[in-house]
Each structure stands twice: as structure tokens, then as C-alpha cells.
Amino acid sequence: MRSWRCVDRDELQRLLEASPLCQPVPEDADVDRLFADYDTVLRDIADKLAPVHAVRPGRTASRFNDECQAERRQVPLQTHAKR
Image (cartoon, helix red, strand yellow):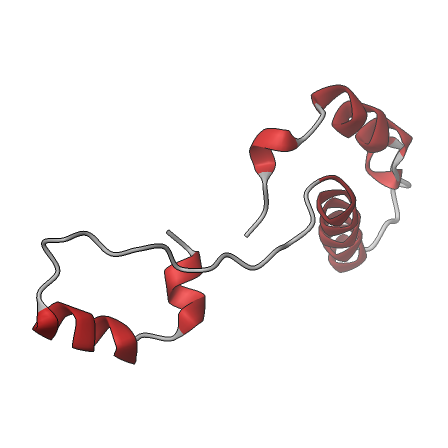
């Protein structure tokens, strides 16, 4: 999970403007390379401004009965973190 709310928008803009994404693109540029660069640059910026961190599942609502709790235990932890 990433804490997008904590991202400094001015810093995001500065990093994007300084990145290769805001540079002129040669006419003979390889499209696959451009998409790979786009992905890499955006991931690097995201990692810098909003690093991925684990989220521990919170308490369940009181309406969860024993059957719901048993089903919930069967779901991988990663799925709980996406909420």
C-alpha cells in the first residue's frame, strides 16, 4: 500500500519535470522503450514520494460471526491490505 495522501504535489511536479518523461522524444524512438521508461520513471518517483508499506489488517466488525471469521482467515494477508 502507498500513502498517496502524504505526497507533496510540488515535489511530484518537480520530479516529473526533471524526468525523461518531460524531455523531447526523438522521432525514431522505440515505442516499447518509451513505455518501459514511462513505467520505470513513474515507479521510481512513486517509490521516492510514497514508498510501499505493509498494512496490518484491522479489527473486524462485531457483525462478523464465527463462520465469517473462519472464511476471512483463509484469505491471504495481501488481500486484506488492499482495502
